[in-house]
Length: 374
Image (tube, rainbow, N blue to C red; front, side):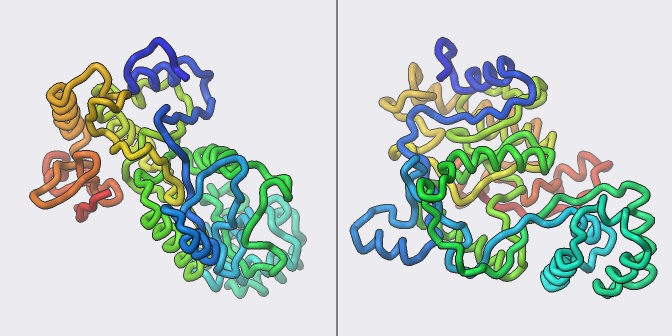
């Protein structure tokens, strides 16, 4: 709890400057009623709905709550992609495909060669047998051997899916299995993913609507079934919700917000995106702020509405939006007529450069793209 500093933006600035460099800080508003996650198990959802639970698609992230397998109902479990598999698909792009990846991982496991270090130490006979099993040509084999000597940069490891053994329950009881609470697991995993992707901020879904959270979870499970890879976060441009997010302390002023507290989460999103070109947003999780709409003025709300008025609140928001468009116009624009936006701005799809920005900055060669709302 930050005491003695008024304003959400200045409180975060205090954390950014006071915490040791490299720290992983998690920030939450003090008026959050509960942190929630979608329930992947449809049978549990049906039971909650039948018993009259209002938000039957989600459950709070309390210490007593059960941890669900996010792939519940798919018959799949997950495994980390072996280091050698990352190397092989960097040199042989055809191994990116689901069928080829799964076959290659099975071959590497069967031959007990999963690390790049072990691969480099293999005798020629075993190297030949490995590439023969992988059905890669002599040219591909030579390319791999050359890349291994040149210290090729590896792509980010993926989370692969595989058929479940059947012994893994859909519901993982934290207390019975000695597991940490899901909130603890999420924060630790977010820290690892930031390091893996080379980014400095993560967030959750700006919506706490249980239908929407369930829809996002179902979409990710369908994607896992069709592609063979599971990822429950997005890396594209979109709002890093200011009510609940985490960041890596850098002591770098380029990440500090400057336009006040009304649109500080929008500004923070843009500054981190501009620097990292990636954001991590875990779409299965949300924060229930007890019915208060984020960023909206309400006289009895407190927080950004305290010691303010509707007029002052609107004026600060408009000033901030104009400044952000001026500085980050390649990523955002004002909504057009009949377009809705929860934060007052529309995000460009994948953070690409718009036509207007491309004319102003001819050195940028990104193709123009359509816009999408958050």
